[in-house]
Image (cartoon, rainbow, N blue to C red; front, side):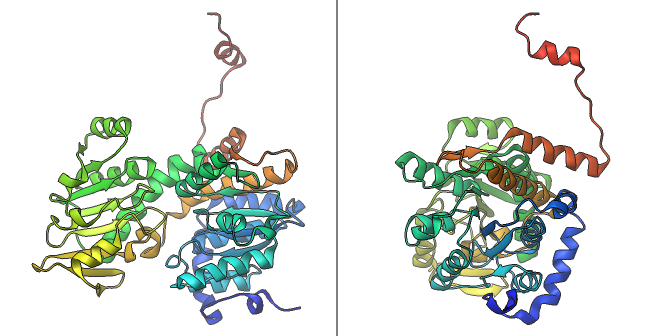
Length: 421
């Protein structure tokens, strides 16, 4: 029978040793997945399940895939962004028994082929998506491959938005759990993970200071809150741009300036988009930006910093540092784009810290166990993560840290459940 390496689609299988090092490093810092691996490998509750995963293919996600395999599942893994796949990690995951179809720098045609090959190989019973590309394919060109699906999960805000739109139109063909909405996911991954990894990517790729600069954050959801908080902590003067008046008020009360992008564009030194929308920064903004302005996107798709306008304004990009492209205006001003406008923290970095992704991936694994336990009883709609999964992940994390918390007494429990004083 062919090995997983021989049936995988890899850039270079010889890169696996470096990938093994990366996976082993993050494993040492992911106690929740370690605990679940120990528990689930004993009775393999996912035996017989075929899991198709589209997710940023780096060390932490590879380790999650391996824990799914330890729980008994057959795992088929592909990327969710052409620039976030790490070829050495992909090769290592294939050597450890996961079927992988992905490589770094895939063309749009190759990227779609990898998604399709993953679904064709898996004929999945479970789906783990990040951004909704597999889900979209299962509702369009390859709907025939959805016949065996019990259900799936969505990792990120953008993907949940797409699922909500599908549900509203009545076209969603299988149950999907909004893992992004779980408290142990978005309160930590979106806020602390995005905040740290995005600023880390800007600093690593430019070798410039954050302190003293004006950082413009477009979007003040949980990801934007994290970016603004971390930028402030590094000494930046933070400006927030928002379309939601409630979130704009929250940014004001958190101590940030709030203004439209039309004004912020002339003031900022660093611009970070975290909105999930398109054309957030466009031609009229580029035209008034300062020489040397740095542009970074932390939203899932490369549409927030509108590259057609950037090229029309600044011509074809010139690579001036790894992951940094310069666009030069007719008057000589240069604007710098990180990671080709894709997710800066993954296209030009290693993504969120391992300890943060341990929380998210603990939720993912327990969600898929819940899907299997509830097969046939779930509607074809977007489903929230059951609260007991959040609680289990949170308690596991506290135990790993040696942290104890209070418990309600029976009297207190009766009190908070009663309407009488």
